[in-house]
Length: 235
Image (cartoon, rainbow, N blue to C red):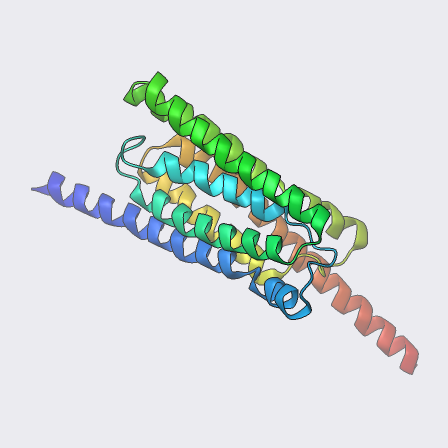
């Protein structure tokens, strides 16, 4: 009886962590909407790059495949969040493609074909060449590499913040949502005892803490410097 209750509580906690991760991920997925409103309004992609959306699409597709029951059982919340993410990234990529100039358009088409071609190869290889246990390892390692690469991208922003001593290019709510999403899926992976989930999201959580700490430090420093300069000008 006690064992059943503990198992039920354990399952409830893991589901709660996974649902929280889905919610925080949704915030990240909708964050580019203002950029695409601008693109649609101006009918031009201007100096924006479509590469982040292409890469995010590839990442979501790989992680979606890992979360499917015939690859890994019991982590359907990984599949749900990445199916939503893949849909958003595909819409963003399509809009970017529609308003790109000819050179960018051809490049985007080539990248989209490459993404779906690579994803088809991953599905074929994992289903035809691997048994169920080996399949989970194969796709799991691919998802870890993809997620770590994605979580490493804030290192460029962190470096920029340190160099410029400004948080202008590191929006607080975006950093907070990234941290909370990573932390939620880190807990989800730990409760599911799945290193392919908790390892990359643990790294993401750590980088999220670094971003929030930098935001707090440089925002406070900037305010203090501004206050001193204001007082000095009045003096």
